[in-house]
Amino acid sequence: MSSSFRVLTWNITNGGGEKLRDRLQFIISQKPDIIALQEARASTWERFNTNFNDLLNEEGFTKCNRKPTTHCHLAGPPTNKKHPNGQIILSKWKIIKKLPSIQPPLNLNGWKAELVKECHLFGESLLSVVIQTPWKEKMEFHSIHIPAASNFKEKPHPEGLTKVYTEQAVYERLARKSNLPQIIVGDLNTPRAELLDGGLVTGIERPDGKGGKKWGPNVRKRTMTIRGMDAYLWRDIECNLLRGLEKFDVYDVFRLIHGNERLDATTHRRGRYDHIFSSLKLNPIACEHLDGYKLVHPVNLEEHSPVIADFAPN
View 1 (cartoon, one colour):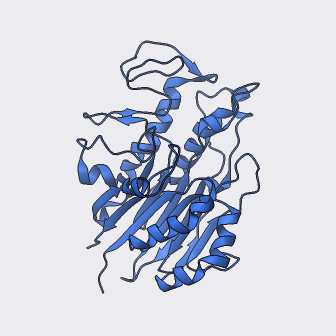
View 2: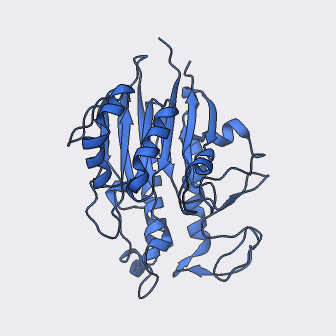
């Protein structure tokens, strides 16, 4: 039996809305073995149950029921009105275990106590499972959705720090050696841009260093805060999530395949926000952002492109 497989991840934006059927048909056309959907809502889950079971079943995905099954898991359904988006993982192979979600971060050096009190943490920001593969090896699969800082009011309190607070919590949850190979996918809402030398322009920066509270990669001596937080600490936390997992054998698959030269790739109008990371053991052999979907299907500028990656474990 061939051990090659394909993963597709996509932030379907606000539950998919009226475009959910088109999106699902496009997903199926890409022949993935594992699907991760961010910004899935309770309504998305219900529509899977009532409208799309036959289509999924025809493609090898066991039918979804009203509760998570051995082939489909939902983070949620979310109930918080401020953050109604959850996640769905669909797998052609058996999901044998759901892993713990995120907990409040422990490493808060440099955080002001009054800022921490204003942060929210949504358990549905991380959905983690163990999947039994056909080649008799298990692997961990994690789907992430980091909320945008702009989703939260800055006044009268800096709720926008919920983004970086969640990033720290997700990093602490995933920053450990695993006995199993791992795939980590999702919408990280960063970076804004990437540089030829491998540098990152994070979500709180702009490439030219202009624009009010935004700051650029060449600004090194400027002391500033973002929503009451040290901007360099914020940047370090985002960089940890993007690159810090390499010490645990988890790498950005797109950069592994294409190097630093491919700077044209974006999944959102603000940058390459959507990612697939993996252990080297899984031998990633291809990764692309499917921007072509936007050319065929009218979408607004805030919507994301799907990302696919192919693997050929030895």
